[in-house]
Length: 131
Image (cartoon, rainbow, N blue to C red; front, side):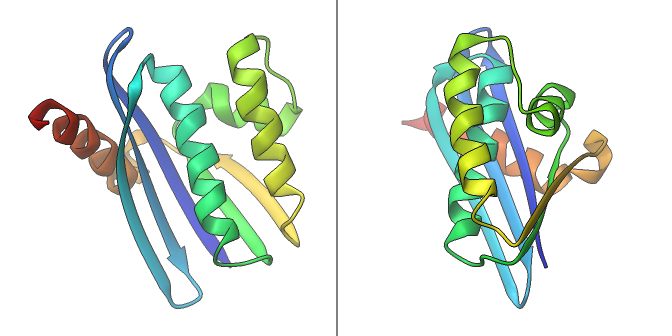
């Protein structure tokens, strides 16, 4: 089983933004910290999950447990629905990738359990600030 932890961060609304992805399991450990276009926090959270799903799909077609501290993202994936038009595109891509896994589930976790992905997302904002 692969565990995928994702977080998006934004310094402003919109503002400099970044995503953090931490993947572990099956002998693998991947840490990604990527600056993204300035956006708001909710959009950054969707982008983080999508990028995390893309990276996880390179590693396995088996069981994937995604974890996010964004209740909006977790709810959207669980219900396969989101109102925001911009987020619909991200959600459709996320659901499409999820179908390629033998078993996929997503779980909301508190910030305290998502520190690795959070640190990577914040690091991405600082990478952008230094550029």
